[in-house]
Image (cartoon, rainbow, N blue to C red; front, side, top):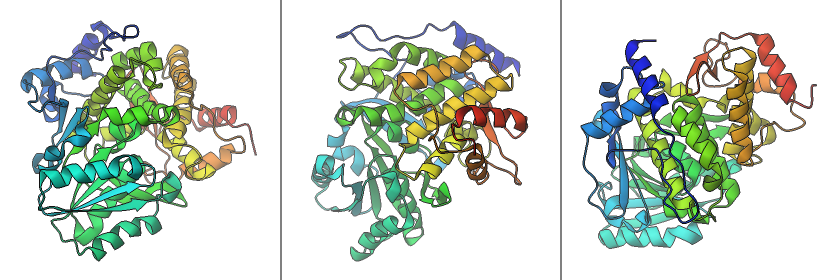
Length: 444
């Protein structure tokens, strides 16, 4: 570990943990010195991202100071990818900001892709504000069935069919209005239609806001594996209206919070401690503190994700850390049938199993393991796989994971202090089997 990282980690430990005060008080997230962050400056802020979020955040904030002039945009995070860089706008009532969307629509043709759940709530509104921003735009839509079980090439074809019927050209823009499934499918549709058209992410779930809408991973599921067919394809922008989360069922909210827990475990110990103190405010949209708390958590998560993507867009290195719990979780989703578990619920199971294995290997303390599992449980998320899933089922399904190299199973595991992890195939298989046997009620 180099000296720069050591100083960064030491600084992170000294920083006080932010907390949400009682009802009616302002819910404060991690401290910041400005409201505009530039993820690309991260490389100059710290020689290593892992464990250095606190000092890097301050350096980046100082590097790109100032604030947004748009009234409802409370925060902006920039994903620095050279000529493919793009902003993440975060705020309230941004679904009414057709002018923001218009800035990122280079042509005259717009196809809004949404689902049967979101369409009655937001489709007319978003269509209207885009048309009002520029009456010359042709704004059309396609509504897909809702749910992970519909994330496949057959349903995806409906997007291409609609674009073909409308005779859309290469300057068209696809707008993903919905959760992670819609975002992944719209991005993949955009990447392939006429070999690539523009697209915009407008996420409406916690999961999509903090994870899937940022970073350019797009795709669909295959019967033998989750997200096995897809492409890296970056959006023109991401527009996050946190007020949309008020209408989410608590189950959907908790599912997304599992990804925020992941960020705390792999990168940001202060975030994890803040979550331990404020998790109840994040998983219940009826609480008065919810709005402030979730906005802080979304902003922090986007900052981490944007910084990682700026360093490693195509998951050749540190971006793989973002898959903590996902190897186990994807196996659970595939085994149980897509849609039985929400993605974040399966990730919750995976986080618990990854923490358990990390402790069995002696890589983390039992205290860190117990805190990780307890935080997942406090979200009302499952921490065990389906009762009929066996260790052998896990092994077979994890064998096709995208992180594997030359037939070797690679896992993201916690190692060291809270907020650090590794991607490795160098672990004792016997310890892995101990975890699988412990967590599987059906032993085969």
